[in-house]
Image (cartoon, rainbow, N blue to C red; front, side, top):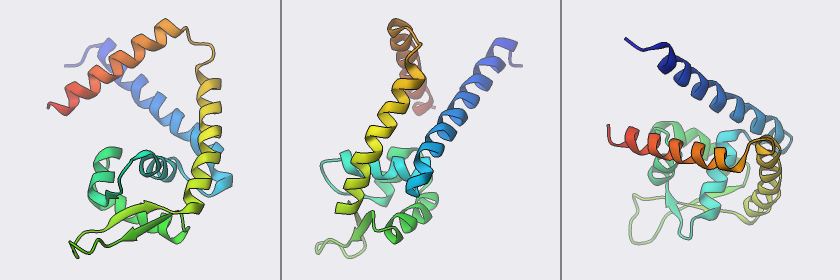
Length: 144
C-alpha cells in the first residue's frame, strides 16, 4: 500500500513532466514540432555519430515501434534522413539535415529561454538537489 507521501510524489512527478511537455509543445508548435519531435531532432543533432532508430528510441525512453512514426514525420518534414550504410543493408542510420540543424539551433535558443524562465525562481541549490534526486531515480528505475 502506497503512503500519501509516495502518492503525492508520483502524482507531482507525473504532473510536472506533463506540464513541462505542454509548455514546450506550445513553444514549438509554430515550427511544426511537438516535444517528442523536438527531442528526437535535438538528440540526433548533439550526437557525434549517426544513430539507429533503435538507439534513438533508447535515448528517448521510447519503445522501438513508437519511434518509427516519429521518424517518418521528421523525414517528411525534411528534418531527418534515413541513410543505409553500405556495410549493412538492414540498418538505417539517422542524420539531421541542414534544414533540421537550422531549426534545431533556432529552437534550442527558444527551449533554453523557456527553461530559464521556468527555473528562474528556483534556488540554484534546490535545483541541484532536484537534479541529483531525479538522476538517482532514473538510475534506480533502470536497474529494475
